[in-house]
Length: 528
Image 1: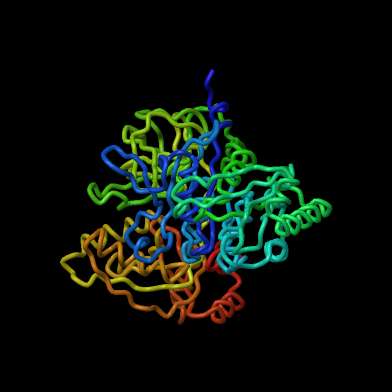
Image 2 (image 1 turned 60 degrees about the vertical axis):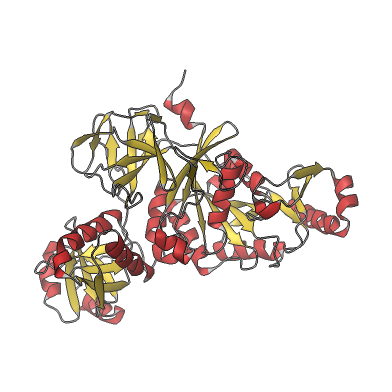
């Protein structure tokens, strides 16, 4: 008998995180290749009419800049499981979006560049995982190019992230001379052979130690010694410490040539936990076999230029989702039909009739849904609130052509709903000159690009004098607003942020007025 629990046991829902240029988007495509979603060759995805794009970077600005700005959801089968892969923005300026995506994931794969190791954004993203208590696997990518030593990279992971790296595969051949990998558990050697531009799955030949020694000579001997040393030191992958976020299973490979991709995908199936009962705001857990419930973790408009629609990304948390069921939104209490439910494959979508815990569905034009909302079939529930990151950059936005004000206001509202940028309003000015508040400067570039290209409302941004924000309340707002070097602005949900010219001035106000509410947000520029 098919039940939500039995279907959930087949799901693996994980996110990919990395520093820009570490190879995350390439690895995403190669996962699809090995999962059969790209046919026989990378890029050869069939769609309703013609071909489907393999890339998860669908936004025009992403393709221009060569970085991931938005998050994307992809689903494909592998072995006897259903894989739900969530691609995340690679740039630190979009840490808040990464955090929201991780809310919908049960684990993560962290991609490192073998030549660079732990980079600043890698650390920020790891801290997001730690805050969410998300276990993660590590894929050391680009081993086919010159880079750091394998042991040096392990030391770097342990010292910087304070988590124990436990290799599942170990490279044979130094970085830049990649022959294959030895499996730490069995000692089996897998030898790789290149394919043209990595467009097909890499041929693999498994052999025992004697055959490997004869085939690879000194490269095998060096790898075997290091592998044996790691085993003696107890560096063995362990499910318990992995799920407790105390260790990270490590895989070596090259996404570009497909070396090691299959081993990593097998690791996802074998190690990533299936969906579990979800914690609610009151501390209880909602069982997988209870009636349908889902969490809205992202809202995105502009994915389909032909229709200009709006999609709410929903992680199914319990029960069976059936297209057309009547659901209730927790924030508004309103009911709505799920007739336009779709499964997502990057920018492309197809109508979906059912989904199970762990799956990601897209609800088209469910305009009453916002990020963090719970939706249910039946009695309303609430999930824990998603925290907002403290912005560090503040720009006043004004539409260049006043005849485009209606489009400007619509665009600003949409960006606010998506969380693409935080929109703060002065009670006296409203939408005439909202303040855009961001974790990083690139968010402003995305906002202005989308306002002009999606909504036809070119804007000019003016730098404000503010550098830091904190949360406040109605009782403190009037006093704070009367102070020099301070302003209080409101969000669309009615919450208030107090903005300061400098951290020094903020600390001075806090010291002089301990009675006022000035609360810290999640973090500046990510998580501390």
